[in-house]
Amino acid sequence: MAFSTIAASIAAELQAMARTTESLGETLCSDPDVAQRCLPLLQQFDLLAQQQAELARLIAQLGQGSDAQQALGSMRLEALADRLGRAA
Image (cartoon, rainbow, N blue to C red; front, side, top):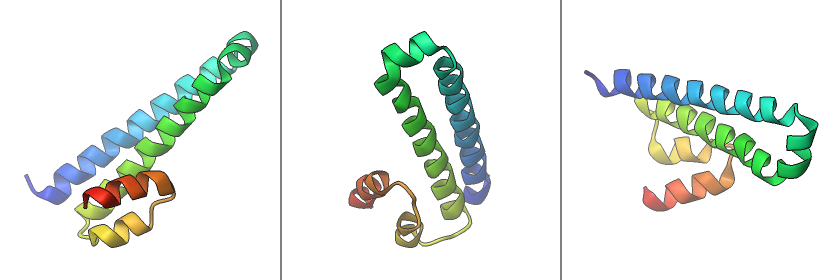
């Protein structure tokens, strides 16, 4: 299997995980008692979904042959891009 094919598959899986994570967070936030008691924890669901979506976008770009530094530079989450950039 070509790298571009597996990268596209991984990106699609991460996007699906991001949507599921976001949906779970929204469901939990819709309960006012849970939202009031657990807001800082619920905000972590949002961050997790954003990170999953950004990783999906990054992997898709790399799978299409984009330069790693350029792909990292286009990321919307600076802290995640910084962590990944240190590894590159």
